[in-house]
Image (cartoon, rainbow, N blue to C red):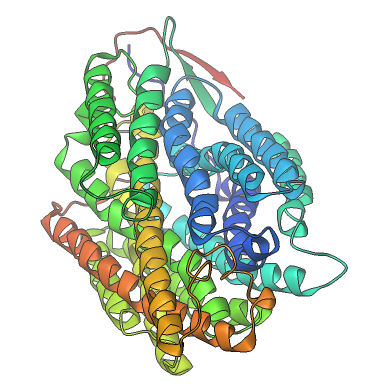
Length: 522
């Protein structure tokens, strides 16, 4: 039996539904950008280390990554509307717990739980939009998506800085502030979002595959965080962690190849467009997450600016993202061609990273602003359009799995990128602090550990200067690594097959399916 065609929504109905979807997307995205600016203050207040700083971000990305394909697969089976609402509730609970934490270990755990909800929101918003709007028209609506992303990424750092710098609020309100908006989004979605539900009987979700993927990636990221500091590169710990992670990922591939409903459907992944979009998404993920995380730290720790000032200084990157996303979306709708914009976006991204690779503690701010603008423009032109390219090649019944697969690998790229770049930054900062202290004849004990270095207020002025220069000079090195990885995105974009965006929500003719489908409206 053919999959039933959903009734086309009017422009007004689409905008009404989009209002709720974009509102919740704003909450999820801004929660990350708010925290990125406030994180130096948060970790300093909790006396955390550079490794813990990285893991507050990595834990969120990791659980979002692991849960994204599950949310996407559930969206192919059950009510997309209900799933969006559930993900919002999980996010709200995680926000409350994070705001009440008393140490970095609790904060990492709370952010990991919050990441489950954030992963659902980011994946399901894309799925819901794909179920409402044909690919050819989606570029125009992606402009609204880019606008919200730009607003979240501009307002988030500024809001985070203001909250931290306002004495009667404090950093805990960085987590509480999004709760009222999320509740409003729940109400709006209940009234405006109505999508068909394709239900298939006797379907199983591949929780085993998702768990194996999360476990394998986690073990390798833990190794990245501690190798060369807690143990040597060639050691039994390295052998155990790397070997164990590879075995877990191999088992995950084995399970996915045989699962009736795999969380990462290998037939879709093997398609040329999807495979290349995955490679591109890995690079974009590193740009989107690594840029916001470490630039905020660079401005505050490396340059001595306040959280509010750091938020203002990141505006060029956010304007680049919002502007490029909006303009590219409209041009794609007009032309029906997507590849040229993805190629251009990835090239601009490499150029931006190349500019940031020259950062040190004295780099002129105008130069930093231009490089950040290029990074933002590159992300804006490529991120959503890589998802769109894949959605254009699959049937409506597979939209959830295909969209979440791209989101999965983009988030995975961000997770690996933040972890690896954070580990490299921690090593270089520790070495720099130790060598500078040795040059002055001061004792290096503890200062290079990161535990006291991030709490600058507790350090003497001379030591503060050493710490700031160490962070400022080390940041450029991690963006040089990002530039090299982003080149993979350029190669993937160039290798993508050019294709015209279709003008229907589903493929025509509809793909026959074995299971009986029952359509309801939710």
